[in-house]
Length: 213
Length: 417
Image (cartoon, rainbow over all chains, first blue to last red; front, side, top):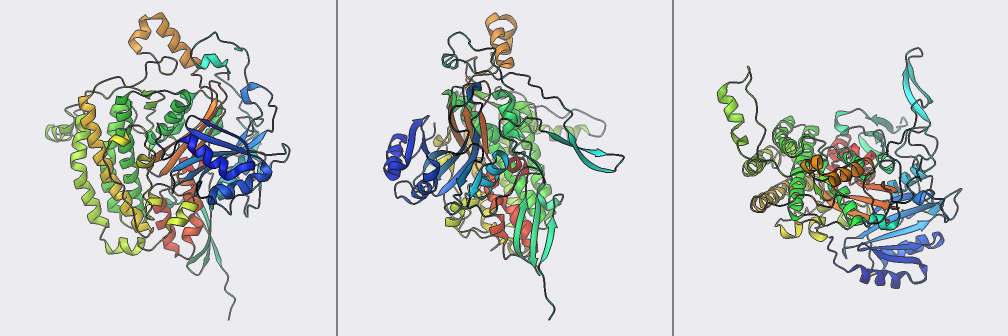
């Protein structure tokens, strides 16, 4: 579908050569290259990806947090929080996805890459706001999308969809007040994970009772 | 001498030039901006979290409501991401329809931008002019999808239905004479394609009208030339894409560099600016509209010649035809399963990006094989643009703040998500 200047396999080799030992895991799927690096090597790996001649990822397109704790509706074995970065090279016309898991589930901490790409600024603030991932070295790590005085990190999987508080106008006190939510969470369509064959449009449904929420 | 302090001024969130709900905390030294701190999130609806709790099709209409002035472009990226994960080949006619409506959307978006940007800088006339043409574009949306704005027309696997053979017409009423009724219905006698054809033919003339108002206008140039300059190198580092990047002279356009759908078979030029100021970005967007018009013309010609299916016939992805559903048992089951349970997207992750009118708009889907996305990330084009606002506005006068906001082309539906 997408016509890139370089074949994904060739890009994988370029990146593998540039990063060397820093690569934990690497794969090509759906014409996209994904590289996983360890948190302690994250910053240096990103610098290499930005500076290296055959990588030259001059733009950071996107940075987002992921909470893996309910992946496949099962308890997740590995580390809970990850940051997924999408890089683009305007010069060489190639894309790369970088994933890094935060070492500590209780206090997810990663170095900030704001010195490499200025674009990171608000993306890291967003990941901090929604997932509570702290980026060390970010000069202005404030909440960005949630309300002033918001408590919690709403995109974590253990945060309910309807939240904890709601806001309304109180006619007696003549001002806007916060109160515990009055709406009852409701899931119309249950979340179902089928066996792999099912996605290939074949095979009997399994695991139908396993729902989430 | 008395000690002079900086002024801190609050701008918005309810301000006509804030393009929605932008709150800016501005620090001034006299009338010169020292620091600008945009506060966003006032329109945050947690679209990404909502999508995690909804099936893939249920989330589609939420995409319209992201960037609510270029609705179908958002759907486009969303559908492309799902199709990439599922490995679906979209019928060629659907691809042309999608491209045509993407370009209609681009004109729609740029007309909104041009009107409000001109309005912010003191020319109300241009707003009235651009809204006149936008009305026709909404009619095209309505004829194809049934909705003027939030279309939900692009679906995973194609588009919801084929282009209609008739255009809705204005009905007779007491306040309209038969003569004026005939005049406003004149271009609605044929199919939707005829209506679009009529628009494409007269649109260049309307473009000239806007340009007469602005391009060589002394006041317009005084307000925009040399304001909000960003160099090519800096623009790339700041994550700018689309007209913001092209205004700085980088010929980067995903439709050409990483073509999707049928863009590689269409002829169009990529306009670039030189200095990267607000005036260059204005010129780039103006020329983009003319190029979009060219693309639409090519799509019309192709669509007239080539009938065919507009959505895949895989009933695990797209609904079966309605007539068959009433009589065929299997089709009924497919319909029931698809509407109650949704489609299953294989485990994996995909990022699909399109050249949205505002820049690169991307959808990143992480699927664990369920009927709902595990994580959906929307890469909004305006998000990094607004993040760079502080840098663009520093050292400029108070009046330039609205010029720069207008030139960024921000819409809070997509920035706040």
